[in-house]
Image (cartoon, rainbow, N blue to C red; front, side, top):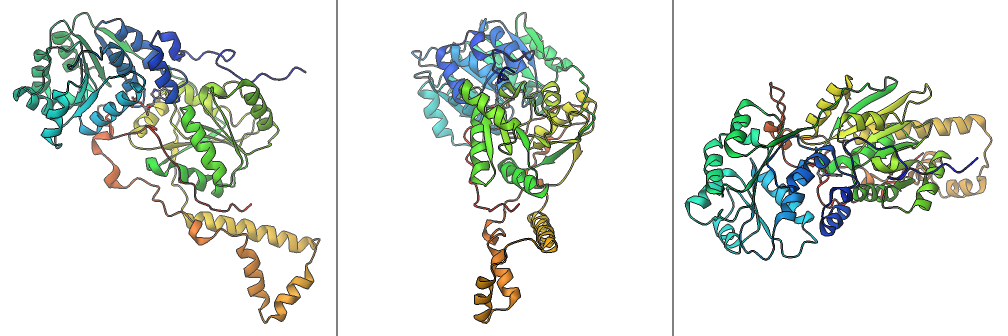
Length: 496
Ligand code: AMP
């Protein structure tokens, strides 16, 4: 039998809408930045809008938070900047300061290899002095909230005369928040021949009117979601957790359910590496699979996974295509997939061949809206569960240990280190004390128990992120794995 081939971007079936970034004709500097961020392929909104925006026409992109929309407009925006020109060339409007800093952060990361491109976030509540200085220095890309940007326009500290590209991110939300006048003023202050790009979760008549007034022949891109059938044998649950508690939640679930084999999906190579390292640091046997790993190594990892030589495989969608393992207990969406199709594809890896499988999704922040849309498109209900408490995990471990000891005692077939035990008893210790001391070496130390708050507190929730009655999606803070995330694995000893 020929060796099964590990899936590669070259031999894997193509996923519609996902293409290699290199096929979009973007510069080597941007390709390098995208690779450094660990993005393996575009998301559908990226493959649809990046070439259009790069061609210079006006574009309206309908997309939600978590779709990869920020990179969709940041990549062509960075490409458009001439670093030699010391003036503001791109203006990005966002509804909130949180989003302004997130977008500015993404610009910063994507422009890492573009020499001399400067960007600045401009929002209310921050010191004017620093903003004056940054604007005076001629920040190429300004990312700001409409209110504070209008302030700067009124003070003549923001010069829009050199704007080549104006981007409105979450345009619907900006209108909802009452920024219409400010937006109109900013748009009127920018040169008429600029390119205008709108991103919005919904295209209401108000948005359409705004687009008509302030753009020329704008092309609208909507990523159509096809309804896809769910995998009925798979038990689907989700856990709403704080972003920084995802790892602890995952470990508790693994421990609580005593999971012995699982496939864990992350969206980026970097996240795969961090998670695989953290799991190993936590005492699990885990391997990784992503497009940045040499083919020979990938084949080895795949074969070992099939042989159950290790417990957990952490992978990106691209690398995991074609994985054919029959008795997977668990699939985990550590990062939410981009769309319902990816979700179904991922969870279809468990519950195969008539076996019962379990698919677990960790959701943080505004990701809950994406999950709701996955539910709608897969026409399945994903059950919400609570992450077990440390006490519950502890209880399960004790039960398992009790069962194991009871079975061993019952069978009576084990070597008895009588001499050692007698020596301890002669020291005056009771049999209970001796047994407790021995068990102590197997049980997790109290210091290793989790103290991390896992569930989101009501104060973590940005109510504007909740879905509104009209089915509108709202953004709340960061939801995806932005930037570097460092795990600090605790030295908890796993007991089997
Ligand atoms: P956004 O919809 O822009 O808020 O993006 C959601 C998250 O997805 C962010 O953390 C991005 O860094 C990440 N992201 C964007 N594009 C990609 C991609 N092509 N592959 C993997 N992750 C991505």
